[in-house]
Image 1 (cartoon, rainbow, N blue to C red):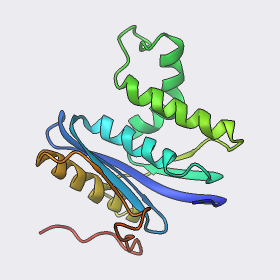
Image 2: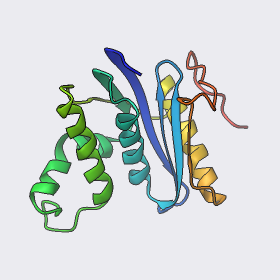
Image 3: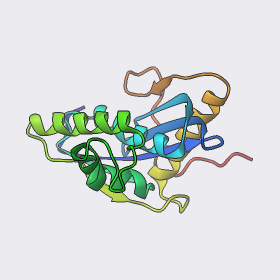
Image 4: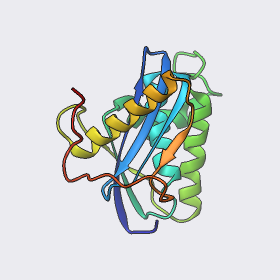
Length: 176
């Protein structure tokens, strides 16, 4: 997918925290990706949603990522480079949590820069407040966590045509 500007919302979900974890991104055109890992935290899910959104849109000039996680936004925008400079220690000297994902985020960011693309534009949105793309990302991430709880660790996407795009004109219907 190549374009000048594209907006995605990302989210993560966890059953238990720590526990079975899901991640997702949903784009303005209804394309999406989601995944499940057997064990993680809500923060791991949030970071994976951000990472996969960046990796899945390598040629988008202005990639706008909307997230309800201040942790994911602050980690990407402010903290990850400091952790690396300090030898993967926090400002208090503790080992950096989720280092493996942070290293992948740095690599994804650096790959964009190497292609002459600007950095990702991060926007904070309030979760569970009717923001349509965020609601869809939440729905997909929760499904991922549910799959992980059943023992399915995998990833799914509409990009290859195997799964349908979402109708993002309105938020998903809530389960009853």
